[in-house]
Amino acid sequence: MRLGDFVTDYRAGEAVLRTPVQRVWFAAFLAFLVALPFVGGQYITFLGCLVGIHIIATAGLNITTGFTGLISIGHAVLLGVGAYTVAWMANNGVPFWLAIPSGALLAGAVGIVIGIPSLRIKGLYLAVATLAAQFVLSYIFREWESVTGGVRGLSVPPAQIGGFAFDSDFRVYFLIMPIAVVAVWASRNLFRTRVGRAFVAIRDRDLSAEVIGIDIVRYKLMSFALGALYAGLAGGLWAYFFRSITPESFPLQLGIFYLAAIIVGGLGSTLGSILGAIFMTLVPEVLRAMVNLAAIVSPAAVVYVSPLREIVFGALIVGFLIFEPHGLAEIWRRIRRFFALWPFRS
Amino acid sequence: MTFLDFYEYSLIGLLLGGLYALIGLGFVLVYKATRVLNFAMGEFMMMGAYFYFSATVLMGLPWWAGVGIALGASAVLALGVERLVLRPLVGQPTISIVMATIGLASILHGTAVMVWGADQWRIEPIVPRAPFFLGDAMLPGQLVWGFGLASMIILGFVLFFRYARGGVAMRATATDPHTAMSLGIDAPRNTAITWVLAALISTIAGIMVGAMTNVSPELGLVGLAVIVVVILGGLDSIPGTIIAGLIIGWIESMSVAVFGSGVREIVPFAVILIIMMVRPFGLFGTPEIERL
Image (cartoon, rainbow over all chains, first blue to last red; front, side, top):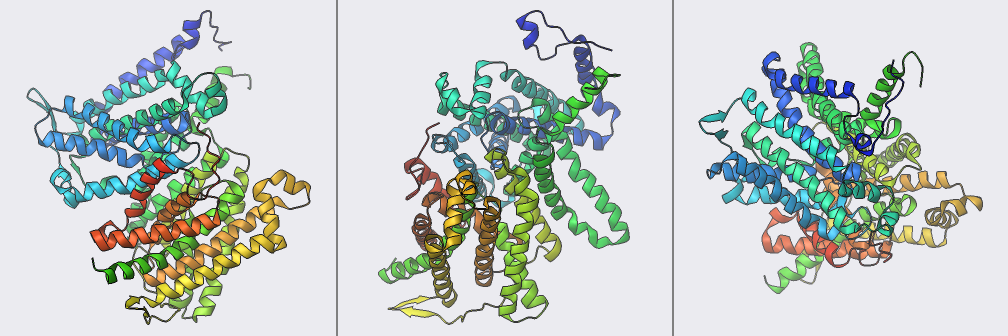
């Protein structure tokens, strides 16, 4: 039984991992991430890659929506910007270590362009601007054939360094997962800095934030641009993972998927981004397995996969908002408290 | 483009704008009462159209029974949504409620695909199809009738809010729920009624749009385009929404005339990105812009 975590200086109070136990668990978790593709099969590795990409995008949306309180509905299309940039560059012989950051930066720049008009004013204007951007950019993906390949989309050569090609799920996992870990680590640390704290201040009470000297428009723009940058990063990895992208890869429903992920995981929580992304990646898989089971009885059940997924995503958003507004991260915290305090009750 | 083309496309655009204004009215009602931009409005339209489709095509009832059933079913749906989703969220930040309406849109869209399938269905238009002629311009009959009906409904609502006791009570609730309650107005009930009225408006609009195009799960996308109209109109202004509806309808029709029908779906969205730079509070909205 642990009696308490006693902190004696400011540095320790600020630390991300505060106790030796946490550090050990974290090291074990990193070892697990390295071992996963070796012990898990093909399917687990595939899911691992997908989760990694979703975690980056979810962490980005959580910066914008969860920490700063700005709703973005068109997050998916920003992934698209990153993915198309990477696909185009890869097809023109640019190496991946240059293409991926370029995709992320371009998505961030697009985010600034969308954000400038809509973030000058208070209210839901960013939500509407991102909705508009979703349709306008999807249209550009479809019509700008010389760059985006039109409705057929683009195929992407595998990422390569020296003679080594990331051409299988197993290999590309070791491209995606380290980037995901660094991205999440960076987003966690962001909220120990002035910038991150300013985001939270704006979310909690914008008027007070302005009074204590935070340039609100600048920080809101920065928050949205950072979220877009994360989306672009995830999109670039998406391109190297699926190796083929079409305008249909980044629909409005994907943006709603990420909104569901941050709500289910926990708004304004880095752990929430991780838990939410894992949960939301697994939901469609479980649904598909259930429908496949049902299809043994009646083969017609297969057509219900995609509407069922939409219903479940929507119900998760509504249900978590009503019953568990702090999401899985809060449930996780309660479980941890239970064990930390056992045999006493909190 | 000849002058006749310009004239004809302009008129068609304005007629379309009347429909947009009607759908926009649904958004404005809910926004005024609850300060929530209801992203599920398009899905309410779609559900209304499907209710009508079920009653008239699947069950073979006459059109007036179909309209009655569709309105009744939508009212029940709106009451259920208000009670199960929105009332538990009273007092939560607006951002949560808005996200709940996004979730709701996803649920309704999935339900429609599940129940009625992803196919497109035709419903028989209620109004005569015969075109109207205004000078040399030929105008689709349904659009003219739809415009007339939309104008009547909007006019009815404006009068209701200005003069009827219930309408004044709803305005009071929207302005300040606490004062309204202290004066004996049942604010939660008024909010519920607002949702029902918005659902009824969307149902009528849904049946009209469904008869002009087709009934499909994608019918709700029109609702997203109308968000642009209400932003331009200023979110809380009914006259603003009417004028904004006409403007967006006209721009859309003109763009189709100039660039071809491929741009139709993105025109309103391209317009809004520009509008937000110039007049973010819309044409007639309360210019209480907090630059925060």
